[in-house]
Length: 129
Image (cartoon, rainbow, N blue to C red; front, side, top):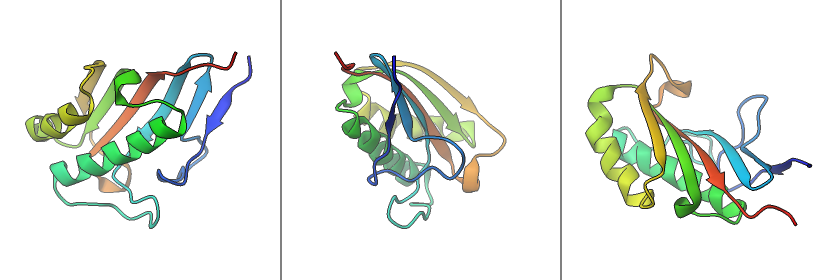
Protein backbone atom coordinates (compact mmCIF):
# COMPACT_ATOMS: atom_id res chain seq x y z
CA UNK A 1 0.00 0.00 0.00
CA UNK A 2 1.55 3.28 -1.11
CA UNK A 3 1.77 6.25 1.20
CA UNK A 4 0.19 9.51 0.09
CA UNK A 5 1.86 12.71 1.24
CA UNK A 6 -0.22 15.80 1.94
CA UNK A 7 1.44 19.11 1.16
CA UNK A 8 -0.71 22.24 0.95
CA UNK A 9 0.41 25.88 0.73
CA UNK A 10 -2.61 26.72 2.91
CA UNK A 11 -0.82 25.35 5.98
CA UNK A 12 2.73 26.15 7.12
CA UNK A 13 5.48 24.32 5.30
CA UNK A 14 7.39 21.76 7.32
CA UNK A 15 10.29 23.43 9.14
CA UNK A 16 12.28 20.22 9.36
CA UNK A 17 12.66 16.75 7.85
CA UNK A 18 8.99 15.77 8.04
CA UNK A 19 5.71 16.01 6.10
CA UNK A 20 2.57 18.00 6.86
CA UNK A 21 0.67 14.70 6.82
CA UNK A 22 0.79 11.18 5.44
CA UNK A 23 -2.15 8.99 4.48
CA UNK A 24 -1.83 5.24 4.89
CA UNK A 25 -4.93 3.37 3.79
CA UNK A 26 -7.93 5.12 5.33
CA UNK A 27 -6.01 6.99 8.02
CA UNK A 28 -4.14 10.29 7.89
CA UNK A 29 -1.43 11.08 10.41
CA UNK A 30 -0.80 14.83 10.55
CA UNK A 31 2.21 16.52 12.05
CA UNK A 32 1.62 18.94 14.89
CA UNK A 33 0.45 22.37 13.80
CA UNK A 34 1.61 25.52 15.51
CA UNK A 35 0.23 29.05 15.01
CA UNK A 36 2.27 30.05 11.99
CA UNK A 37 0.91 32.09 9.10
CA UNK A 38 1.39 29.80 6.07
CA UNK A 39 2.32 32.72 3.82
CA UNK A 40 4.83 34.51 6.05
CA UNK A 41 5.99 31.79 8.44
CA UNK A 42 5.46 34.25 11.31
CA UNK A 43 3.72 33.42 14.59
CA UNK A 44 0.11 34.62 14.66
CA UNK A 45 -1.21 36.02 17.93
CA UNK A 46 0.12 36.52 21.41
CA UNK A 47 -2.73 35.02 23.45
CA UNK A 48 -3.69 31.38 23.73
CA UNK A 49 -7.02 32.13 22.04
CA UNK A 50 -5.41 33.85 19.04
CA UNK A 51 -2.77 31.17 18.66
CA UNK A 52 -5.30 28.35 18.98
CA UNK A 53 -7.45 29.95 16.25
CA UNK A 54 -4.46 29.94 13.88
CA UNK A 55 -3.61 26.36 14.80
CA UNK A 56 -7.20 25.36 13.94
CA UNK A 57 -6.95 27.16 10.58
CA UNK A 58 -3.75 25.23 9.83
CA UNK A 59 -5.27 21.91 10.93
CA UNK A 60 -8.34 22.68 8.81
CA UNK A 61 -6.21 23.37 5.73
CA UNK A 62 -4.51 19.99 6.02
CA UNK A 63 -7.84 18.24 6.57
CA UNK A 64 -9.29 19.97 3.50
CA UNK A 65 -6.29 19.02 1.37
CA UNK A 66 -6.98 15.38 2.29
CA UNK A 67 -10.70 15.66 1.51
CA UNK A 68 -11.64 15.55 5.20
CA UNK A 69 -12.91 17.92 7.87
CA UNK A 70 -12.86 18.29 11.64
CA UNK A 71 -15.66 15.72 12.11
CA UNK A 72 -13.45 13.04 10.52
CA UNK A 73 -10.73 13.42 13.16
CA UNK A 74 -10.36 10.30 15.32
CA UNK A 75 -7.71 11.47 17.80
CA UNK A 76 -5.87 14.64 18.71
CA UNK A 77 -2.80 15.24 20.78
CA UNK A 78 -2.59 18.76 22.18
CA UNK A 79 0.48 20.36 23.64
CA UNK A 80 0.28 23.47 25.81
CA UNK A 81 3.16 25.58 27.05
CA UNK A 82 1.18 26.27 30.24
CA UNK A 83 -1.67 24.18 31.63
CA UNK A 84 -3.17 27.41 33.02
CA UNK A 85 -4.25 28.04 29.39
CA UNK A 86 -6.29 24.81 29.30
CA UNK A 87 -9.76 26.37 29.73
CA UNK A 88 -9.17 29.12 27.15
CA UNK A 89 -7.60 26.63 24.72
CA UNK A 90 -10.55 24.29 25.21
CA UNK A 91 -13.07 27.02 24.34
CA UNK A 92 -11.53 27.53 20.90
CA UNK A 93 -10.76 23.83 20.38
CA UNK A 94 -14.35 22.83 21.17
CA UNK A 95 -15.75 25.17 18.51
CA UNK A 96 -13.84 23.21 15.83
CA UNK A 97 -13.80 19.63 17.09
CA UNK A 98 -17.56 19.26 17.45
CA UNK A 99 -17.33 15.50 16.81
CA UNK A 100 -15.42 15.15 20.08
CA UNK A 101 -12.51 12.95 18.97
CA UNK A 102 -10.38 11.09 21.49
CA UNK A 103 -7.75 13.43 22.89
CA UNK A 104 -4.64 13.76 24.99
CA UNK A 105 -3.64 17.19 26.26
CA UNK A 106 -0.37 17.79 28.06
CA UNK A 107 1.76 20.69 29.15
CA UNK A 108 5.32 20.61 27.85
CA UNK A 109 8.43 22.54 28.79
CA UNK A 110 8.86 24.22 25.40
CA UNK A 111 7.24 24.27 21.96
CA UNK A 112 8.84 25.22 18.62
CA UNK A 113 9.40 28.95 18.19
CA UNK A 114 8.15 29.58 21.74
CA UNK A 115 4.46 29.21 20.78
CA UNK A 116 1.73 28.52 23.32
CA UNK A 117 0.10 25.47 21.71
CA UNK A 118 0.42 22.72 19.13
CA UNK A 119 -2.14 20.17 17.87
CA UNK A 120 -1.60 16.97 15.91
CA UNK A 121 -4.35 14.79 14.48
CA UNK A 122 -5.17 11.28 13.33
CA UNK A 123 -8.04 11.33 10.85
CA UNK A 124 -10.25 8.88 8.98
CA UNK A 125 -10.03 9.62 5.26
CA UNK A 126 -11.37 8.00 2.14
CA UNK A 127 -8.61 5.64 1.03
CA UNK A 128 -7.78 4.96 -2.58
CA UNK A 129 -9.75 2.10 -4.04
